[in-house]
Length: 565
Image (cartoon, rainbow, N blue to C red; front, side):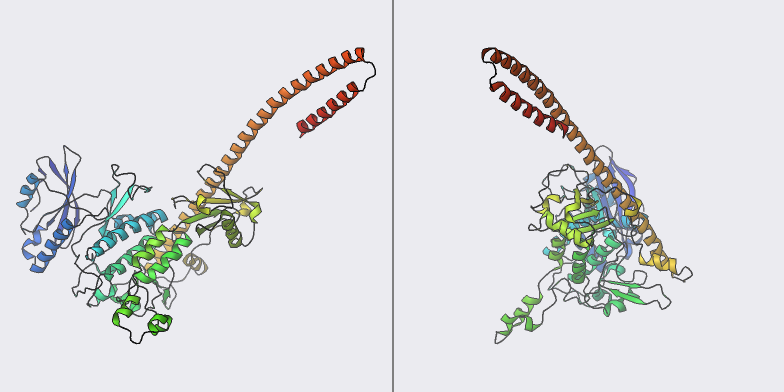
């Protein structure tokens, strides 16, 4: 039983999504710019809904109406005329849920685009992390666990231009806000509560849910960790080509510091455990290092420890050893040091300066602290480029920015800008002109090297997909490097042009001053000759004229010397 094509000024446009027993439809008003995403129970299964499913549906509507957060899709009032019309098609009699319409689709759609097969840009990664972390923190503060975090349940909304400039989104270069949807599996849980129901999407479920064990809100930490890894690298961290039943055994046996498990392409099909993110990504090395520490916390297998600092051995806490008796609350206070939110927030708030070094063709990045001066930063670059160029021979260029006067003894904060899509600083070697010998191609991904070395090796389908992804990553990275090189050359040329312009102006000013000076010298010479002639008639053979003439000649010599220089 299909919904009507129109109701008054409201027109049914498209089906936005269809789940296990819900369907979401877009309705738009023809007279005013207004849209609604309306969720109703599917009519074909309306009579098959179980009491538990009815309870879950009602719970979602209740939760949606009780929350208000900029990164969670909010409910909207449904016009009475539309509500009355849809009631006739609501066979299940479950509550109709009317929500805001997010016009840019889901994060899954973004990740499925070919150009994003190796992850998103650092700016996009940061924006998504900020928004979803804020949404999850809000839900957990409300003692609500989402339980179904996945790219399909993160949608993109165009930033509202009416928002205040002081808004948290004021620095959004892509003008997009990311929002959580689908709280159908959400439940009121906190870290002290447990549940035993089996819910959510299998590939993003925490191990304890897959094993049908009791769980708490730490299941959201695991799911968010998987989504975060996929946003950065384009694939999930744990054997993404395998089913949950297959990779579950591997993560059960992984140590806490392992954040990635993948299968080699060798004949043995070896399973590799790694504590690093895939190197094929588009985020800066400093940001990656910080995130790897966060992933250790987020992807901890032990649900009781996930999201928290690991419990330290008793010997490391002398204050507890001094006590005659240690209570459970003492141990709990040490163990329950929640790091999931603080570690990621710290990484996102960190000031990182990205650097493109022309003479080594390298991308570098550095954490900027208030105590780090520009000179200190250049010394780090000198060290990281194996002292190829000394600090005294480095030229610092700020691309696409006014070449402000840089104080090398003050904080390197002056080099930072809130834009991670391109290097913030370019470093040139004094007197260097770009030539082929200065350009060294980026090292290709390991899988490409192995395939080129052993072209006849037999590989599985998922490895071929990874090979294609790595090839695209390599080409895309090289294009970015060449684009950066062109921008750097353009910036350097602009600086040279500005210097030529300034020098030309100074030359013209000096020339004008010289002409004035020449006229003054001529006037002085004429006056001196006149005075000497008069003085000679009054007082012949005096020494004054000789002294004046000699002083004037010395002055002319100095003027000529300056003019020559």
